[in-house]
Length: 90
Image: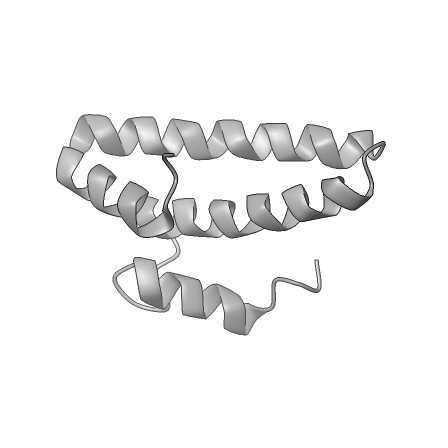
């Protein structure tokens, strides 16, 4: 995972979380999962038969979905803001 450096993580947490040390907020976690999902999606475009990566990608999408469902139940405005910021819906 050399594509995801600690500087990149802190940048994501600072942009979507409350601070660059905020690793626990749902927004920060969704942003991190989205970054990793986008990277794995690009990897699978060139390596279509990499099934272990495909499985990891599907598990990650499920985790992001769970966090988004939680956020939707707790605070719909924060949910809408993160979905819009990360451009998750088409």
